[in-house]
Image 1: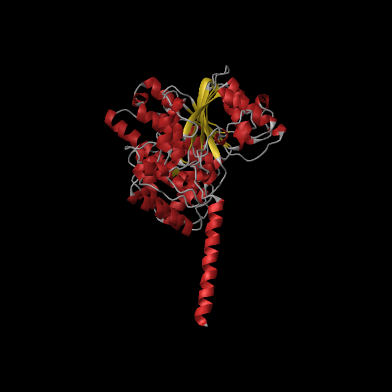
Image 2: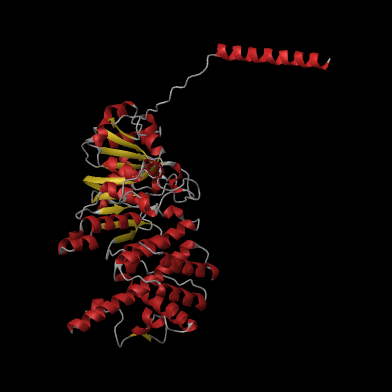
Length: 519
């Protein structure tokens, strides 16, 4: 867990950028990502050198990032510099003006040249240093150098904290699903070491990072057995986005969380043909953007074969169905309109989920979960692709509180240890009223057991498929929830009228008595 001192150091770096003239939080995050990548390259070189010193063997060429005794000369420049000059541990000691010259003219050219070396490096192909002054670059380098990131957990937490500052800055929050909602969805899906996981709208790769952390915690052997480790680092995770800044940030997020070579790639998931990815993935975790409508001409033809619509929220669900292999499962966030929309496409997609696949559950989220960026009501859709049906009952949960205030401030309502879906101690009734996530997870795990006995008057319950089909496949929780009203007892109107008449007589008698007394 990130400490107060680490937060203070990161806040100081962030504030330096703002005071130095970079006020766009996404640009700050992008520049910090470049610097962290440069720092990571130096750390990798140091590890390779230490290993070579221990073994007496030379550093393999593919691992020798900064070859000793060789010079790097950018294309178009007459003079080069020794590779050693490009290392973080060397240029951090330079005077600000010379540091800016080395980083802008040599280090960034070096990053662009290395674009083919790894999935992380390829996103540096278009890297540009936009830090405007030598003084700000020196402050940023000094600030990041002071942040102790000795292990993978700390590196990941530090980057997550930086990402949270994109949200608190009041911009670009659409790129970031709240971490505690990601945690709930990952815990519900319980990723396995042999899963192949995809987020077709990956953004900062929060879902992929969450899945990786779950596997590290619950299946540690996945990182110690060679075949399983190879799959974890090279074949398990795929993320797609059509924003290059997000690709860089997401890739760095995966790198700092210890995933070596994930497939984080540029793709417009709704517009491009996905034939090569059809039925490839065993798990999809996603919160795709819902931007409205697309033209038929700009939509992948394979999606229109599932459901003919221009609405992106329906097209993404169709995409999930095409990408999943039979037996694959999904936890995805959708706007409430998907659950009860009345168009032919809405109804057909819901019919497919209920009749042709296995719809496992719906978690209705409170409208304030994505504030201050959006107040739209959303839900978590949980389903398994079978192509042969299998829906008998659908589990519903009415999530009313997520541990934070549901206004624009999103203030924390409980101590840190009692937030999120996984807590060490059971919450009290009062604490549950402020954070439903642990209860939602516990009841999801009992959906085939004790949950079957719960009535639709409770916070979670199951609905038979026949009832859903009879309701035109409406999946909104309000359709099936029953509200119990306390019976109120009222005084009969006749008694109220008698009391009013008595009061009126008393008032009139009082007036007559007052007149008599006054003479």
